[in-house]
Length: 478
Image 1 (tube, rainbow, N blue to C red):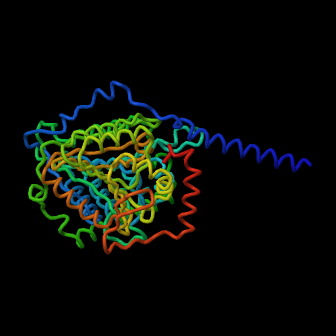
Image 2 (tube, rainbow, N blue to C red):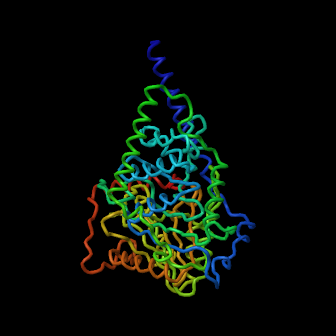
Image 3 (tube, rainbow, N blue to C red):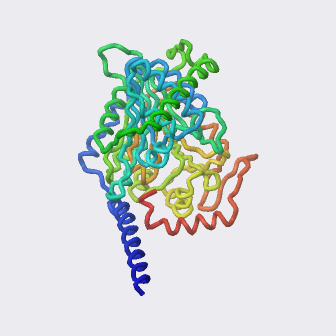
């Protein structure tokens, strides 16, 4: 009898603890935060266009190979500081390439700062010898943004989703790629994702001039550091641990030499002025940096900017999960602009089951906005987050058109006025559209001739539909 009572007591305690963790984690986000009138009034579309050439030049990074190559090339130029922020950083061949280079630069006396989201840090970095070796270097500061604390579950949902690399005052990379083989390089990986980034090159390096958007990115990084962060690798290190870390550092230093030998082109002089596009204006748009529910500042700014278009807007997002406010704003864009299209993964092609399950239930609401919707069926999941506005504005960054990016996570998007860059980006977008079905109704499509669609098995689609039905009460987390 006593044994049964103890068992029940344990089960009840476990249930109460689980309820505490779940309710504590989701309750702060049940009600969407609303924009203030001051936030609405602060937006001005005028600052995104200029009649003069600015200090920044821009290069699209459309492939995983170019993304890794340009990271290596840019980091190799570092003399004063390196800043890397990323949502997710995992072990892999591309991470080893970058880690070896960061260690080499740290050995040369260049300060390195790494900021990884605390969820990824808990799940992956703490179990990675390579990342722990990075954190152990005296010239590298490795931090976690908003580390997970089970005693305060209400702090657990606000994640850092930004992906930014800043080198000296020379240049920076911003976009949607995380730091591992799924996104970077041509190394073998179980899956590969299509994504997009932009490299900005500051032509006024070393001058007493902070007009470059690089300094906007730097200021935003400093704002992120004002939120809860924890330094990775703090605390005592036992002798056997120190030995393993020292051996790993030496292995990575040797890998750096191999990388130089195998890819001398990435360490040779490179003229960015010949490989980038001129820009008139580059402006960084961001949402709030806190860890609690956020006002939809970034989404509002993006849609207000889209409404200034004269002829066309093209939106690329991996998925779309919207509430009434977001549908209303997107409808406003469709009504204001003659041609407005949105491309996202089809349910058959995407790699986010949660977002795809929601789309099965809410697709009709997205159709009712009046946007022309295209579902991508190219085979590899599409992860790019971009917008083109008319023929001269490109917007590239980390923001997904979903509720989590809008109300919960930190996000950043770069608005670039450049006819040359926008023409290149629109060309890539048009090419991707060749592998899309045009949505003509909740269950009907216009399918291009020759497009092969790998449909999900019926049981999986049914399972996603059931899961999506359950999800409707919690979709503010998606």
